[in-house]
Amino acid sequence: MSDITKTKVDLAKIKKAVQVGIPLSVTTYTFPHEAEVYISEVITAFFKEIKQEDMTEYIIYSMNELITNAKKANTKRIYFKEKGLDINDQDDYNLGMKTFKNDTMSNIKYYLNKQKEDGYFVKLILQAKDDTILIEIHNNSALSFFEYKRIHDKIARAEQYDSVDEAFNQIIDDTEGAGLGLIIMILMLKKLGISSEHYQVVSNGNETINKITLPLTAYSLSSLNELSKEYVEIIDAIPQFPDNINSINRLLNQPDMKLSDVAEKISNDVALTADLLKIVNSAAFSLVTPCRSIPDAVKLVGTRGIKNLLYSIGSLKSLEKFSPEQRNLWNHCAKVAYYAKYITKTFYPSSRELSEDIYVCALLHDMGRVVFNVAHPQMLEKFKQKCREHILSMDVFERITAGLNHSEIGAQIAEKWNFPDVIVNAIRYHHEPLSAPEKMRTIAAIVYFANMISNYQDETVEFYQFEPVILKLFKIKKEEQLKAFADTLAVNYSSS
Image (tube, rainbow, N blue to C red):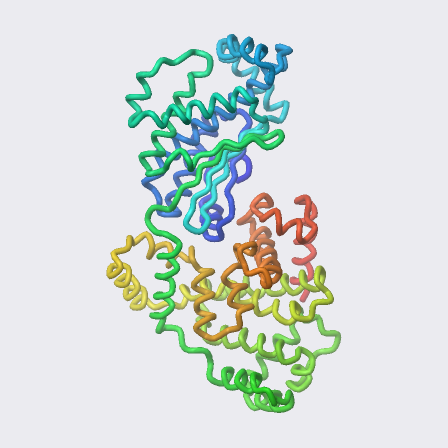
């Protein structure tokens, strides 16, 4: 969705972007009517997905206004260059603006084609993150001082009006429409309860960015998380963590614990023994010689490693249902776990702690999504009743049951089962690793990267949607590098 190459909106990509809080981007060079229609459809689908349909009409108008202004700014660069005028010189700017509108409008096709040839673009970015909607319009021409002043004059003037009718009554000059469209946009944002402080224009180097920050109106992050907590409390369809594994974990926590006693206790449970050996002998651990006994496995992975593998096995047992969707979810989790283990070996080969923790953290990252797959209809009806008791919109219910808060719910289930903080935080921040506690940021980043690569391979996310800081952490500068690394992971995983 990074460029307008087709007219049909990809709803699956929009849903994925909303679920994981990553940006959506649409790029256009000339903003033809087809692009305007496409962008309107993208905005409509995006705001429907986040249950904010009431904003759609206002946002579509605002985006059309900002994109048109950005396109006009790009056209202006072509025009001034061809006229031999310096757009940053006061006299040249005034001279050029006297003829800009008439000259370009009478030959607009030429100027639009010319700016496309010269690589001038306009980009729309949409992102729903926590309880905020971030909207940005980028164009690759820096504002001149005079343009910057003009924009802020219009913002200040908009503050003087209470309605669009008032704005229409002002005297308008004919050079650039006197920014009436921008004034109307500010007044429309006011109708959404948004002040001009939520609209910013910044110019960085060779780029201009228009930013609008909107709060989600139907709920806040705090109320969403509180309701998620109540959801976890009423999940009676999910059993407590298996007693046999809890018993072994208690033994592992004893100060005078002996690994031989742990190995014996595990060996006495035939099913647990089989599950544990299966994981230890999987491709993720890359053993030269297969591990054939629990004592060998315990020695190999150590106390911390055994604990983590037990958390993995216990979670799988508690949440297994074996529906097709459930299998797909666990298959995805298994792939991400393998990728995360490989990434850790590649970039952090000397960190034993990361090596011991990463597999379980990655395997359980989507625990919150799995929960909705095993929920009974009666339990969902009970949760609906909770929404009614709190006088909360059904949008909140739909957001949670659609898995849009699955990271928080998965983390709360892990807390309910007394999992260690490293696993809880990896689940909670696997979509937002930069928000994780500093000590756990690296492991969250690895899980995020592995998960995003899996989504990239499935073509549900694109290169531009990766967090740049995380790409830099793993020495990825270009999409070709990411693709090569993703291909290596896929080949190794398929042959395992």
